[in-house]
Length: 433
Image 1: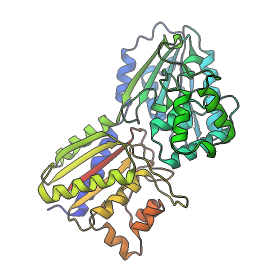
Image 2: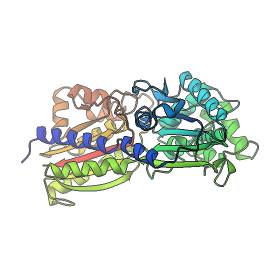
Image 3: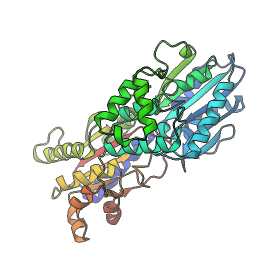
Image 4: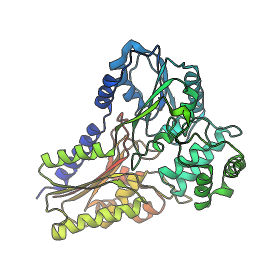
């Protein structure tokens, strides 16, 4: 029977294989070689996201000096060596003034594009926060407060981005409107369950199917209306009443010259992880690439699967590997500590697999950052709770105050990769030896 130490090494190796499968460079190069560029006078590159710098590296390999210029908003530290395209580092997940300054410059570049120009837009996870340009009457503080409230409420990415689009002057298809009549080619690296283009990065060049009424309903559903800044409440209420113009919708003429292409998703990462697990000798099952829900609840299901494999050999006999992907949410306590959805997921699961032999569970974000921490996620085995207790750590208390980071940091069980150059949501791995 494999030791926990070997299972831990295998889990990390399988996760790193997932990162390889999430690298968008090859698909970007292939896409650009198929695209006819001869009819364009200028090629401009704009965009945002935690993986957009690495996406731009692939673009420069293909286009080189054909790129007349460009600007990308990226998260602090998520950079790459580029020659033709400028990078602007800014705040995520809560937007900051650098993000607004970069978004204004991106808007200016788009508006300056002419009918014979090509605007290539690179969008990856994180773009919603990084590409912030408040709508008329709203401030950076208004956007920051709204983002924080929605993140703490447990709203999922679809709900969060529906609200964001209706508080923005650039999201929800509005960047395409700025660039029209230029041709717009958007390359999307999806971190969204279901790969909806209008949700990825809040769809700056994609027709927006959501409405002000949808955004207002989401805010009310989470009991946030009275807690949000007055200017935000007023805008959503006026928009829902038809007093403010909607974001551009499907069929709008501004999208006549726009093409949106997905160049990577969670499914690619999970499929590569599956191949790696099989190569290591595990009977491998992909549970789903559309996992959503509250992190603790989803973790309990994964822990139950580990127990079932150990007890009955279902859905796969040991040595077994079960892989899933998606994006969970966390509801923060009032006096919360430090952590992220993947660390919280593993902490909840650790309590459920306590005492099981040769069982390891890992959960991590493919972008290399889990919440406002320097870790991608964490891993645990059947001895995690015993080890924690010996160190004076209380798993139940840590979970209650959302302090999973310090719990796993003390155990040396954080998964750290640094910025990965990709972002296709999260990967969860169960190994049973």
